[in-house]
Length: 156
Length: 113
Image (tube, rainbow over all chains, first blue to last red; front, top):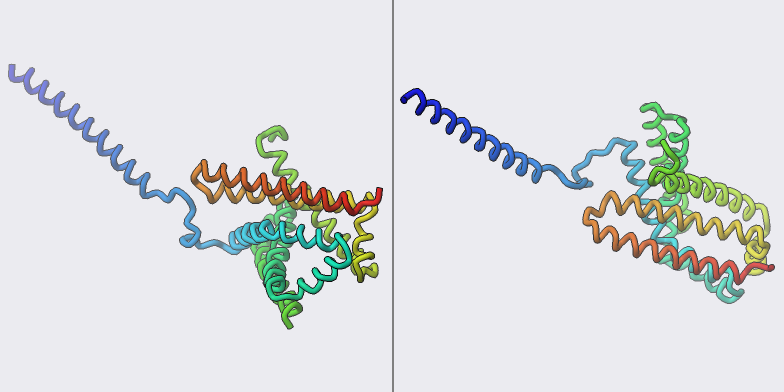
């Protein structure tokens, strides 16, 4: 009798342990899943130079996207008639447009050069890590140089 | 990899528009610096010939399509809420379509047929 009773207790304890383990594992999984970062926190990422290059390509692309309506508006004025053409030439020398052109100089310069870099990578040119890093540095720095040159031409 | 795979055509067109924008930009820059464009008449004359007019239209459409793909990529990566992402995507697509129509009207008013 005692042997049978002991066996039943053992089975109960085993089942209890399994249930406890299952619940514990599930809860732990839920907690760790909650702690896992769901989306990229841009401030907590230490990007390598290639990453900076790529991310700046996005930022400059977004800036250029915002400039499209202004660009088209300016184009429409420039081909409308002589009066609006001349008025546009005067307006382009005002401070808001100058600020816009200074920012867009970097955006366009970086976006273009980084874009060429990506296209070259896609046809397997400069795909070694060292070459890619050098090209990234080059593009990042050239973007800033274009920004400084165009900026000084606009403002000085 | 199949060219009918989802996103493959979009990916390719983003590259093709990029190359076209670059070539148009280089050609336009060289042409402007060599020719004597000073006043309204000579500027407008650049876009009156059907060929240059259509090339310019393709340039603007390329910008809009290229931007459409790029902004879509940014939305997919940085907007986690599905309905918000969809809302922004619809808004972005509609805005770019309006801009395409606007550019068409501008260029159609300039061309000499």
